[in-house]
Image 1 (cartoon, helix red, strand yellow):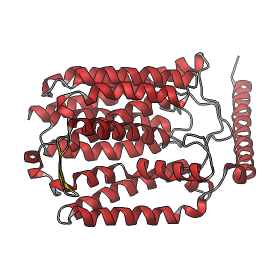
Image 2: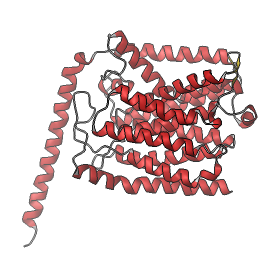
Image 3: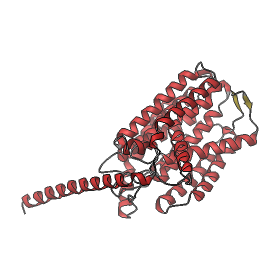
Length: 390
């Protein structure tokens, strides 16, 4: 009963704190002219306030204070330093663009605080591909690589309105359920906090008149929390899996299915860039969400919700398969699905130069529509001012 009360308190508190303070962030950003200006790769045409992720940081810090009694290994004291590092780096990158190397160094430092905490140590893969015990140094390497991959993958999908929020909400709902069933309530409450913030932020992110981006500040923070929850999920002890609807040895595959959207998109984009003899972090419009918008003509909202729905269905499918199937069969299934998706999107392996004319034309049309709307609003305003009695 006490856990349920904590859930209600945290969810409402995090939602309201985010929802009520984002308008103030928007006003400050507009006043200081810190807005994100559209460029040749942008999916938006107006200068838009950024730094929405600032609200995630202080909401989560306050939440960690209230849930500190639920942890077993004082995890909060190890999460906060990494969270603060990524907040500072993300904020600086939103204001002054940083090099990928600088961001990577900061990420390595941030995840180091988490990896050394005993509560996150992965001792075994519990028979996955016949792997049982894992040496500590191998855990550091695998865990560190996994966290860096998740953080950057989530950062890369934040390219259109609503996508990062929708995918983040789906992931948080799944992890909330998993940690509730395994009685790891501390992590369930963290997931609920981030979920509430993302839901509150989503309304602004897809709005036409109060729009704000989460920026790198937000995507790095949320990606960091997702990586922590994934690491903890894989570190769960065998006795905690008794109430989960899948076999213990299938946990790594369930984790991949939960993160399928950012992982698949990142792998696909990196492969295309390397094939085109470019750096893996070279900017372009080869992301899956760009394909849905540029080629299939979907809106930002449509693309975001379709991708989020696919993520949810994919996880549910693998949870059902994971309840009976052995992990080798699931690996074959996962590889087959990824190859199938890769084949579908292969014909959209385009270079930015081939799309330049189309993107510029679309941008001109959008700008023209905005001018027409603004001129219509100005005419209405002038009519009202003339009709107003002096």
